[in-house]
Length: 276
Figure 1: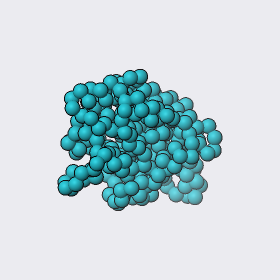
Figure 2: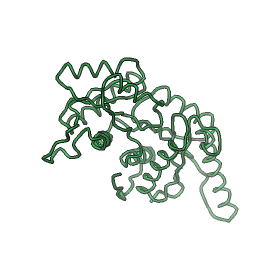
Figure 3: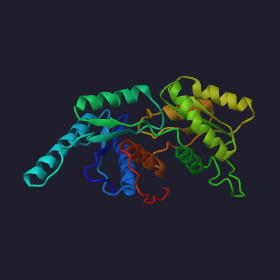
Figure 4: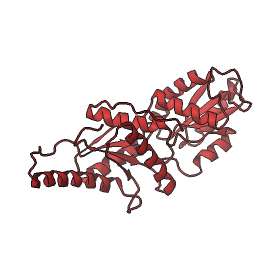
């Protein structure tokens, strides 16, 4: 159970708000709640500005106001309660890897809210994200679901381009998870920048030059931060098959909760989340 009076977990969602993006974010929050019953959680959008897609700063301000309201209600009811201290919310950026621009915007939104908050790091690199990448590739028919099984997938890739956004730091971080993915698949994996023109194609040619022929593009991205059409265009230019972004894979929700728990120094009891 979440500790009594624990700050809210607020998921900071980048990208253009849409029902699909909201659905992914809400499913990730639902996974986190299932792992830590009683968790108070909300979703705030970096580019939100209305009731359907509330801005991150407004969600944080609301979390702070609700904490004060609960304190005053308890005092009015005659209960002896300590005045709230520490963060009103823990903000977890919905990003697989580092992105200086987007995390800078998260910090700006937190400051604009006027609320006492704590900002966690991004979700990766992490072995659970390598697992999620493997699953997305297998769902697309581009990798075996289980390396121990004695069958092959006719369309399995023999080289993976791990695509990310956020600059050179993001590519380097993706490369760490890429090494874990390569160990799972026993094929070469190289990271490339989706938001840098020619990067994906250049890495694809490098893989072909080292002997890989059937290449797959694996997005090292949750999805909301991905500009429309960018992934498909990069795959077309590089001549790669493409897997889906990580989305609301259970490991993503678990990592969101892990960041929240680490910020507060708590250890949630695993509830178990079925893979989806």
